[in-house]
Image 1 (cartoon, rainbow, N blue to C red):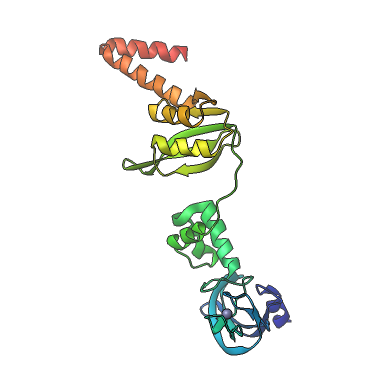
Image 2 (cartoon, helix red, strand yellow; image 1 turned 180 degrees about the vertical axis):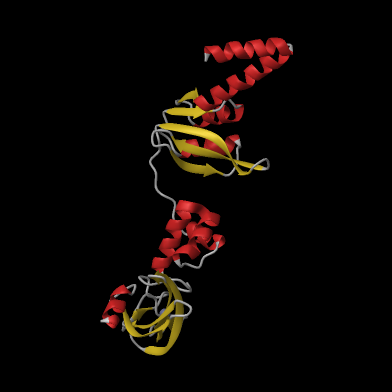
Length: 269
Ligand SMILES: [Zn+2]
């Protein structure tokens, strides 16, 4: 029963055979030894199948925890001879992509969980959560797994918001593009230069309305990259400009007058 239960929990259930398991009740750790059931492999260079086994070796993979036990998968896999005489690789190792990637030290299912945690919480907060749910991962590990995700596809939006964002506040800025109908960021440009935004707009035709702040840089890029699009000032920057103007007006009069004007403004709003 225990063997059947563990076999069902294995990643790639038909590709791995359970050999034996070890339980460390002091450390709350479970080690599951498995072997591959594949009888042929494909050389990655020539993609021709081969069945001649050269040798066997072990891969040690961190897996998802089982209840409150951390779990290590010790996987026995094969090296095969490549029988293609024209191939420079004489020996190829067995890959089981359903279980793990070549050279990886984690199972695919653990990697996917780390990506989900990283997407929800980012590196630092995700790293604080991981030990609470039995996973060993630091912030940089979570971020590395996020970098492996491919960027989502997007349609060119009809209404596009353009603004600055900071890679490092006060030092380095880029340009963020947002689909304002979906409230979804769709691109981050590496800088705030006119040419960069112009090129993006030329390469992604179809934007009908462009929302921007009142900087000349964005205006110039939009004039060149999407001359047919309507440009509007976004609400945030209009309110921000109004606030800055009011501050200047109020600070230019004497203190008493400023207080009176502020009271009047407060009453009107
Ligand atoms: Zn080969």
